[in-house]
Image (tube, rainbow, N blue to C red; front, side, top):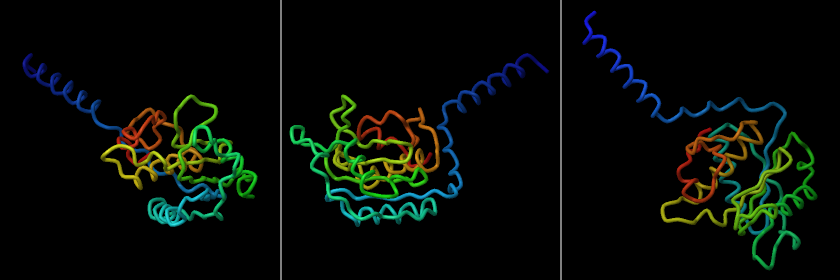
Length: 199
């Protein structure tokens, strides 16, 4: 084999490796539905039940999941910070734990849904999209999902909820891939828009 032919083969191989390295990662396959586990949505405050119902329909189509909707929970006074005019994520989860029997069952994932601006007391962030706790509880706020010019509120909400379902229900780890719905460093609407809804 001539020197030029060998050089050409090596060059093509290097180009091929470079192209492969630049390709986006394939999404993780959706795991089978965990046996003996359930997911419930808990509308809190004035969160519209029809929005929760739309999420139920979405996940039934996407994953074949049957998700329950718990009775709406009035926002407790102690869960609202009148100085900051924000809901306190930890106290919403405290109220969820105190109200719903499902929240005491580690096999049940309960995701609270609020439409008020929210922050995490144990954080320096100005606001938060969500918080997970105890391995099976979460709260998601829709207050900042309309931020930015190009974002779609419904799609952003689905991504936040899908992330919680992936972690709490399917038991998947968070990801360093900014295009994964499991991306661990969501800091604002642009991060949400960059994410897909694939694991």
